[in-house]
Image (cartoon, rainbow, N blue to C red; front, top):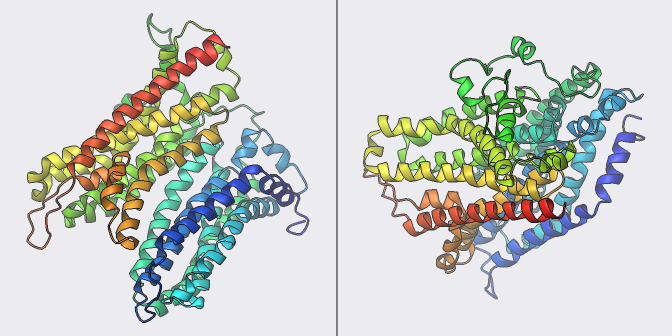
Length: 539
């Protein structure tokens, strides 16, 4: 019953693998990877097998792209495995079953990773087409796939452990991404660092990587099983009530005190009196109660992880190598992209799930009050969390002389990050208006942000590597949708003779500002129209 006849595993496999989205995801995944190989395939009729640098670059890019995609998809499959049971009110019934906690964890883990395993193995025929081009042996490809499977299993177990600590899938998902993403970037850097030493890279992939990942997976598995054996989050009768004062006595590390300065500027204390006339009730309710209705664990973990990761980046990208400042801005943008949607993707879908949307629409509160009340409270939290990683940029402007002559570029970086906060918030709110479930809204928001933010720079990099740089002038205009492209488009001259000044492209920066403002205004107008025509009139 632990593995062979595990009912949790059987049920999850039947539900997940028979859904229509499983086949759609497989088709899109293979079409994307196949399209990359097709576009990057050498155009020469006769290939020089003695010069296999291009073929080797193609295989490396194919593998790293698949590694990043599979690793970032792992939390989406595993982060809701246990928290989903809590949201469906079936968590206590699952724990009361004859199944051992280890069998539950193993069934959830294997079911979460089974779909990813299908995606990974189905791409093998595509990469095998690249082997005749030379430069990479079959053993290197098999070792790379072995390392990929080990990494994905580790990220899945890490996300499953996060799922056991949170009551909401959205909270577990964002914390999982914050933990997984630095490990993914470290894996990409390590793979590139040892590119010139294939024997050493093969040794690390086959020995050190599985040993470290195996130890981490074992510890997380035992801890998660122990948590299910003695669950601290049952017995509430289905009520999502958190004793904030009791939690503060048990919290380790950072804790937010709502009645003290400056924490009360971030989130005021709960209201004990009546609201004044003219106050937006949606804004007041969201600001004072909704953020901490599930406890402060998620907020504390997000702040601590962001600070822990930012410290080495601050030293390297802002103080030691000032010319790398856009990379630190990219980290701030990535943090905003991950954290921002979680506070707004469930703002309207949460009303649907609690069956309070109809009641809200029958009140005298206007659609505009509902929207800006939801938007400002989520944007306020996102802005405060982003400021934890953004303030070193202001500090560098004062302490690093290389930035004194680049204040315009530094101001542009701040504008880009603030607009990214606004974009993530409005897009998450829009998806929450359109979709029915919070998890669906959150995942669609992440997909849309990934397309808008990552696709333009990835297309430009691909054109430079495999298409001779010819289409670069045509695809560079797509960078107006990406804050990453806009950050690297700003000119920067650190005044060092060893570092040439970066010319940049101001048109991309200004185009990004115009596109972002117009796009956000369009989304707000569309949401207003939906509220008035779809629900106010039809409902």
